[in-house]
Image (cartoon, rainbow, N blue to C red; front, side, top):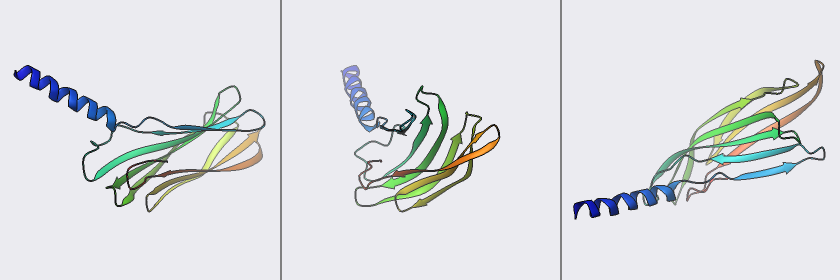
Length: 151
């Protein structure tokens, strides 16, 4: 009897924990040369869905890749959020980045938070043989809704 009850409780906990995990979302922007930017939201397991107020940390990453899939640069904003169905708020934001392509450099990196939004900004500068070619502004925005939906 006790083991059956324990199995039911464990099954309920595991199914609720699975419901609490968001899946990554992605969106691609394809350019004329075949290069593209892919963005995704990484979602660690959050609080159980029946709690009245939730605090969670999420990250959104935008990565620029060549047409062959080689990563040029990547910028991530990480935000801490609270929401309860009636209100939402970003309480902290941070930026991280990588730039594995030696012909590109990331500069002017900054982060901010406003309302329920965390934003990371940077400038990607392209060089050829040490000569500056162009600058590309990067902005990655992560927003939480009052019900805990992220975009």
